[in-house]
Length: 225
Image (tube, rainbow, N blue to C red; front, side, top):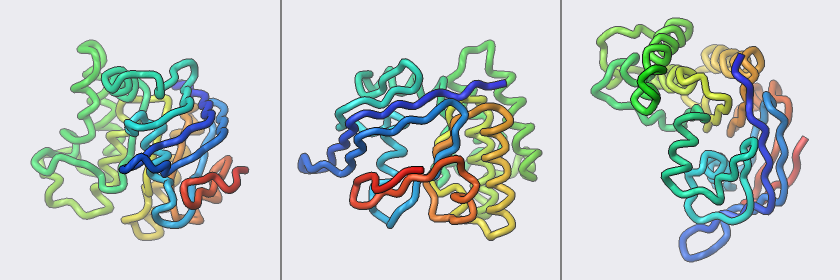
């Protein structure tokens, strides 16, 4: 079983354009395998925090440690290598390659993996697509609906079997039944495989299923449970 990573954030400040702080998180601790839902008004800094946790924010100070790896102190190249090895990301706008099939997109993590691991990643990608009800054939994702695209993005995040899952509004483009099914998949993957899941969402139904919840407003953490 995949073992989730512990998270320790201390005195995190993310700097935006013009040198203005846009996010200030004094402390955040997660045990391995915890699910955390982040909520709050639009533009509050939720996605900024998610990107910082992935090492995608360039101007930041403080500490973001996944287990013993502090991303703040790493170079861009080292952060990218860490993401490839340890993080599965689900972006709100999917970030799929239109000219590729569902399997071509879902298996993309194999391109950055050691040769010995590539076949297993492609197999997991195909399995996840089938489980999510997506045909892994030659049809290009350019013709997919928003819900189908989201499920391909989820399959891609799951394919690498990473211990950390970071999701940005994963149910936003789905109707209620599909959103509930996707929530089942995300939370089931976290709990059955021991992954640590951090999810930004406006979906109260999804939030209520998380182990912990945290509200962000104006770039600051207001409460956490």
